[in-house]
Amino acid sequence: MIRNTFLTIAFTLIIIVINLNSDVIHIPLFFIFSGALILGYLQPKKGWISALQLAFSIFVGFYVSKIVGLTPTKYSVFEFITYISPLPCLFGGFMGSYFNKTINQNDDRRGSKNRRWMD
Image (tube, rainbow, N blue to C red; front, side, top):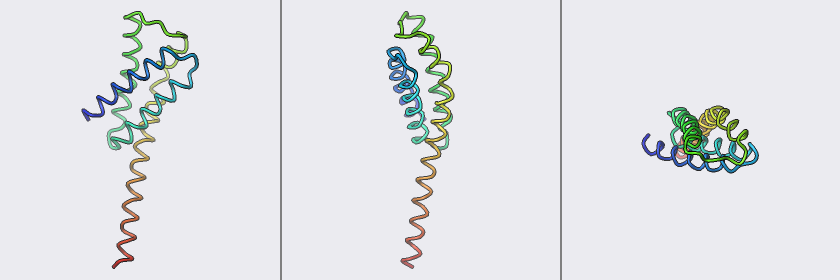
């Protein structure tokens, strides 16, 4: 869990920098979804916690950047991405966890089929 918290902080910093410098909404949303997907894949049973951490830290990054005085390229895009970020975070975390469970389940099934042929 601690390792994923550090990854969440790293993804948040990347997302905040991209969000500050973005003119369109697609690129930050892609990175938010990708980060949540990776976090969900790395921790399939508690991926939703990492996704919530990511969404919360994006909100914290938004307010810290306002307090510090960082000016985004387009403020409306920056604000919109921040407020919509929980949706791709939770969806990406769920999908990453689902992919991990599916891949591991298929590996177990293949192994049992091969064992039947050998017996």
